Image 1 (tube, rainbow, N blue to C red):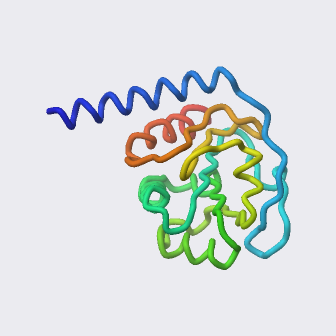
Image 2 (cartoon, one colour; image 1 turned 90 degrees about the horizontal axis):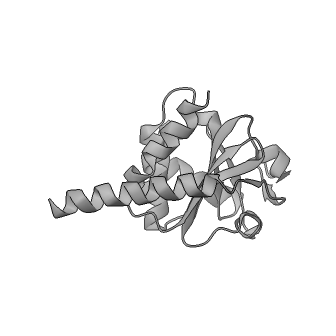
Length: 165
């Protein structure tokens, strides 16, 4: 009972923080990352149209591993292009990490490498990883830090991707 109550309270805190942060929506940052083909990509290349999710992950970080697996297992057909991973690593390491961690479910997902941490700094994230609800180039909400249970975040991702189509 105590664990269930903690889980419910954790979900409530996440949803309230997402609602509060969306009230302070901000314009997308300017940064340069590396595309899978090794070419530089700025934020205008990374950004999607309409609502999309930006997940910033760090290879071999337990919370990042759980988040990548949860997103890969959870997303529905057609959502892959609407979830963008930025991986804090060189391009070859980023690709290997996503394939090994998310498996074939990540086929079609967009990803970029951030070996110098430029996107992390520009997005003003804190902690071990981050997820942001984006609308075009605008950050509508973000959750950063250590996300121990990605299941708490998945309802917000579903609502964001599904509720605004």
